[in-house]
Length: 129
Image (cartoon, rainbow, N blue to C red; front, top):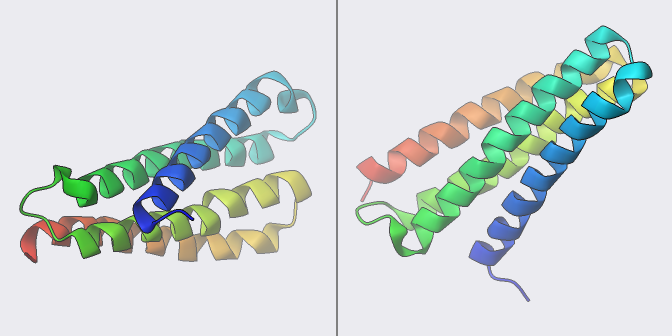
């Protein structure tokens, strides 16, 4: 069974791979099948997912000993926040891009708020020691 650090490392790595895969599919396959606004959602989603996959990896690596003077619990919380944000922002954009259901986009605002909270938590890990 994986511990929290290894779980977050795995999620971050797989999330990064998925972001690259979605971006590649958008560029080489889906550009012929989806409307420009839906393709734009794939672009935004893959970009945000890749950035936050890297943020997950950074948070967990800092929590694992590379971040002297930082609160490891806050770093792990930030990592999980980035995971939740990915589920609620890029994944919602992908769902819209593939289905065309605009109502899904309302959930993306929550994902953005979770991303902001995760970044603030990451920053707070330096202050709260």
